[in-house]
Image 1 (cartoon, rainbow, N blue to C red):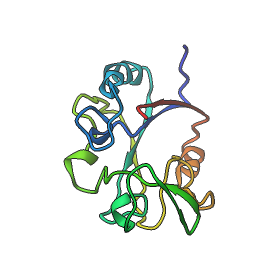
Image 2 (cartoon, rainbow, N blue to C red; image 1 turned 90 degrees about the vertical axis):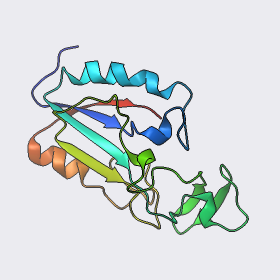
Image 3 (cartoon, rainbow, N blue to C red; image 1 turned 120 degrees about the horizontal axis):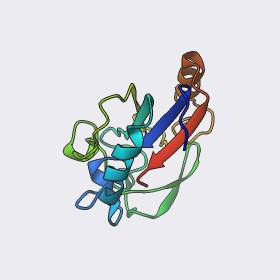
Length: 152
């Protein structure tokens, strides 16, 4: 793969809580870390996303009386899958995986930081109206082609 100066690698949510031992772990999730590190070396432009939930986030089952993780509920913007509390701001689980070595990353885009709306996309919150600002950043920097590496 040939990488251009206007290409960007978008690394999605490679955080402790999504790795083995985390609150919302993906089996063998940490296996992607060395591969992402190697891939990132080919890019001049790298952006990291980070789930960054406040305590009491709308996506947490613990925020809904009588609900359990992985059940669904209806919130202001529609149906929401409920998760175990994870990637809570300032906790070890919200930190990037310690093996992630991408010192040239130029932006960390935090998502899910609004208490009443979840965010799965790096571009829009789950209401599909609220932009994260990533599209504007890419436009302003003249970055055209986006490659994605992710854990979950």
